[in-house]
Amino acid sequence: MTQDIDIFDFTSSDVCMTQIAKMNQHDTGTINFGDPQIMKYLIQNTVN
Image 1 (cartoon, rainbow, N blue to C red):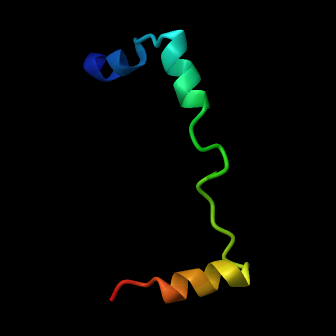
Image 2 (image 1 turned 180 degrees about the vertical axis):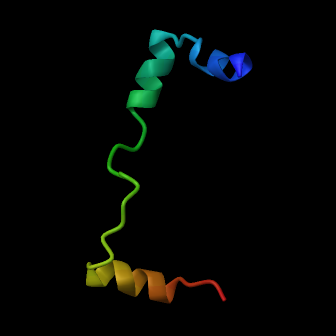
């Protein structure tokens, strides 16, 4: 269990933090399944 806690013991440089902050901020990871355009996209791009 002590090893598991070690994952929180790290530092990141200002350069890395700046790069992380610039990543895609528009993708919140949520999908509005009530949006007809989203449903159309999902149906048309389904892998069988």
